[in-house]
Amino acid sequence: MSLKEPKPGYKFCPGGEYGCGKEKPLEEFGDNKNNKSGKQSYCNHCQNKYHAQYYARNKDKRLEYQKEYYEQNKDKRSEYNKEYYEQNKDKRLECIKEWSSRPALFRTYIQQLKGVEEVMQDRDGLLICFCKYCARPFSPTNGQAHKRIKSIIGTTWGQNNLYCSDECKAECPTFKTKWYSRDQKVGTSREVPASFRKMVLEDREWICENCGSTEPGLHVHHILGVVEYPMFAADMCNAKAVCKDCHDIIHSKPGCTYPEYQCAGRDPEFCEATTL
Image 1 (cartoon, rainbow, N blue to C red):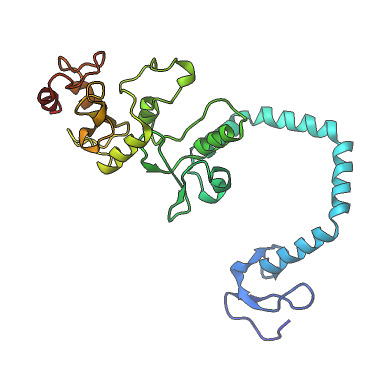
Image 2 (cartoon, rainbow, N blue to C red):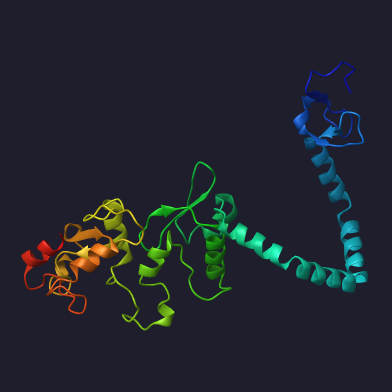
């Protein structure tokens, strides 16, 4: 250990077998009320290194002790845990709810989601995914990411796809399809291929081309109906990004209603006029 006095706000970590002998800021030393300085003698790095070496040397001994302790106190621990859970039931539920609503971190979920979902990391280290319905990039919560991973590994039913909003979830044709037969799902938008919807909404920057709304859950409307003009079904120039309200107005016009699904099949100029 150096004999010279450390600079203000600094402290020497002892040298020798367990210390580095370097002068470091007080922030790099743990708290210890028993020491005159109020800090641990060794810096955090040296403390962690020592504990890691100690645990490695005594791994088998520690495991044997833990196993013996758990066996001797099995009933006592079970009773304590049950009592603790009952006394803190509301608090635990509140903690779980708070954790589930927090934004998911990239480093926490990247290993489970890579190869299944298209993911990125933002500047704050948050996980960025793409909405299953509108393909808008967003940051899912811990609850959303956790449910999606459970579906991937097969420990829960359903797909639990990632959606940027409840509106997109309700409009997505694959959401709750297990509860409905094909083409019978209650909804307000005729099914559009996911890849085509993604291209259209990205091209229009997720903005309704009629009213300028940026609310989630945008629809893709075919100017020329796909029933009468299937050759234009995947034509970007034949598609518009519209909100639900505008889409309802378009399909409320005579000859362009949802049951008919014609949308200008008889008169292209008429349907173009109905798109406001």
